[in-house]
Image (cartoon, rainbow, N blue to C red; front, top):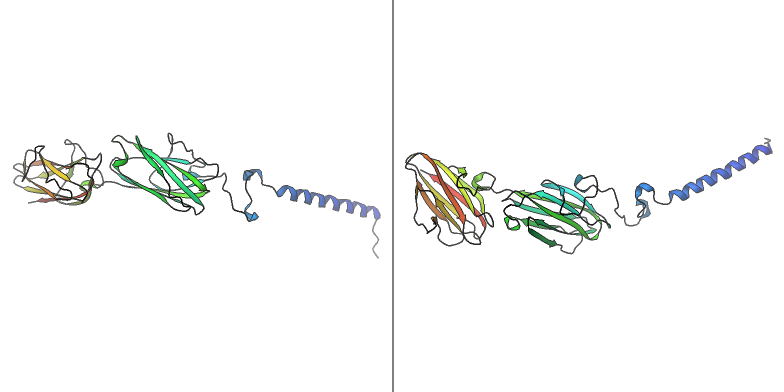
Length: 297
């Protein structure tokens, strides 16, 4: 039989009581949210619906961006992730506008989030958009119709209608491709866009973009046939400089038959070697793409 000192037994019993007390107190403290969690919502192990709070990184900004449309968070064209929580007034983004570009905005929320958005482009407003369903994308296509001629940027505010969660913002631009150059041909007779013989598709006229000015280099004795075929919603006219031989000229000096979607044609005869200019104009309240076909012989 092992004999134990009763004094030692008393000390061991006291230590056991202290250890149990410490474990009990520690367990009580750990049941509540920690300071780093923000003190809100259930933990992931609680089995309840997770509430998004804090730790946002809207568009890689490092935090929650403001809903202030007067001073939006600047982004480039591309794809970004953002977050909307219950106490989030919205996220405002600003993007540089290149006159003539077509811009597509697509916002895809999580399944538990219904979002809306609105914005502005110069003095023009982008009216609020929302289809009323959680998880459903919201989108808009913006052209010159949305902007003034001196617009430098546009801005949008994304906000939660109901629910919380993440969203993906995708902003895509399609530059004009006038003369196959990936840009808007200047509305400037002194700085026309140079082209050569060939076919150029998906050129554009519409809204504030009323003229596309071009130039072609010809040798003495050459003849350039300029044919413009507009889309069904566009009516165009062609005007040239003093060397043009036109089959019909209206009082403003442009060739136009007065119908949407109908091709127009002029012939430029080069008496001397040099640069010859021509201009394509939209007629009336029309807009659309056109194909420019230049034949030199």
